[in-house]
Picture 1 (cartoon, rainbow, N blue to C red):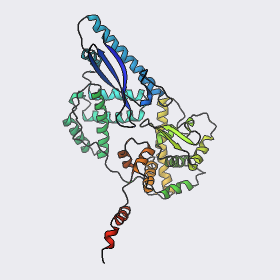
Picture 2 (spheres, rainbow, N blue to C red):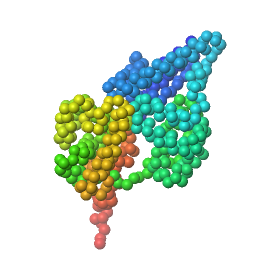
Picture 3 (cartoon, rainbow, N blue to C red):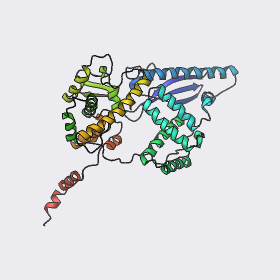
Length: 407
């Protein structure tokens, strides 16, 4: 009789999540079924071969546990049915029956399933990105779905040309392509389609964008603003400074920051985007902001008055509303201090990265401080080096040669 076990394979890239897979055995045959369930090593108990629930992962792990239970029950039922027939069978027969309900799935249909899965696991931001991609690609296809196997280089190139013809920017086109590629690669992992590398000829990079960082002088001007007559502006100013002071904490992480994340002299939180756990020291400028909001006697578990509801769906809507309102107020703050660059929730993050670079902090340290899994991501946040800095560096390199030149 065939057997099935749940196993975990860690990522070869440090800091990235590994994958849950099922190992099937039948006589001398062994097969693996890769899932799209991603977890970090400390979320897995290797001896007991089971998921570990922690405060930071409780919701997603509970969802994974239910899914694994369902998958195991389905596979074992298939094995019992094949055993009862009495004929010889292979693990390919087992896997084929397990996958059969998904065979022939179209690209749009698969995206809809991914969106639902992401929502169930409270990954609302990613699900929203997938929904935008679904709507765009569906318009390109005139709402007529195509099989996953039909998604080839010709289709992606036509889609890119279609986007360009509608005035979609290079970065927005890349955004759709990257989401579509991620969904396609998941389908490959689930053995729903054979990898054909359909995105090799389309642009999936990130083109350089205009400067989004402000100077340290601007940060000081914001800190010194008297906003006692406007609580709304004061909140946005405090959130902007808090983000800057906490190594560029993202707005979503500030919105979901809870009082329980504040320890003795440190803040420990889990990044929503990467699930990476970060700990940072509370500096005086951070403590001053925290004191203003932790003194609130309300029973809300959150530090800042952005989210008040713990229901995931309603909390996410409050976060989106808060983000839009925050960006509106930042535009007003920028005008108050005479800043020509429009301020946004991203500006504080870019500004901290740029200030750290200007203080000669190594890129690797900046990357770790911002919770990036790749230094390539960090470089996107950094402004181009000022030409004068490069010229000064070059003068130092050429000092000896210059000293021999007679004018």
